[in-house]
Length: 72
Image (cartoon, rainbow, N blue to C red; front, side, top):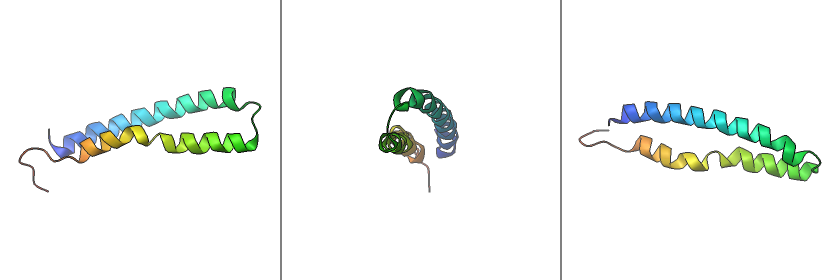
């Protein structure tokens, strides 16, 4: 598969993942943080805000991989 095709597929997959991730985080946050202090609210949102990138690293690496016979 050519790099251009992988980038298209990867971009669509990332968009779908981020939308579902945001929906899940916004659904979970009120239940967890209802009576939490500001410190725990901030901690939750910092972790949730950074955690979405970790599952996407392998996808990004796959998108950037060169195909057979492909030049830069």
